[in-house]
Length: 314
Ligand code: ARG
Ligand code: MN
Ligand code: MN
Ligand code: MN
Image (tube, rainbow, N blue to C red; front, side):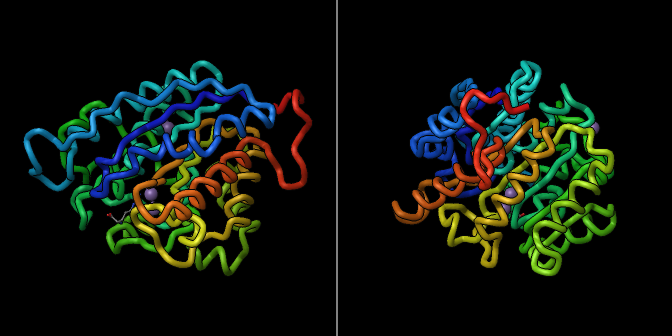
């Protein structure tokens, strides 16, 4: 496939330094070489020149560093629009998960019929008012969902964002740390959500079938895959800021990626919350290796055997 990749060296959507080094760690781990070696045409747009200082005015309201995050979101959105417009599948290397405001909004400018598959231990749909932490990586979906618009306070830096998703356009897989306010929103809006309990109950095959069916019964719409590495079990992705025990196995993760690839409609991928400053050198290596493994599966590198080099993967 034709891939357009860029880095989002950003960490101001949460409190721990290090996610700004995520793109560098994935590059150093051989991501580009790996994608090229399995036959893809990879165009690297480099890393966005993001500002990651704290908001100059200090912390005021209910969301931390809103101007810095808002400014980054605008740059991320413009880049995703550019890449998608060029006809390449967009791979955005984060960066904390606040990046998804920009990636989803940017895709929306070109593909307004997008649907979102959100793979995460967390629901990331706190509004600035329901959030207990004020960390914007726990809020991205609340800025994008139309039904929540009346409940969203005006946050400086986000004047440009108009909600572009309805609750029906989203499905979660992997949830296991959902705040009460988020659970309320999910139920109230009827968002499709498969926690780890449902993964255990139905199996990943059934969960994937149901998730894709729920957001796009006709199988026609472009897919946004938002992958938070903390969806994987902490033993597989230890270098991340908010690990939660009891996550997806590597095989469940790879299955998700393979099934999304099989739709032929994967358009934008976020890779969020890789934090090379956390854990040992071995932990970082493990996290990067498994993340790259997931990414290759998103691009058609199936466990049953990849296509020969040069074969055009539609
Ligand atoms: N729900 C918690 C919060 O709002 C944790 C969010 C973690 N998000 C993430 N992208 N890792 O702060
Ligand atoms: Mn839309
Ligand atoms: Mn998470
Ligand atoms: Mn997340």
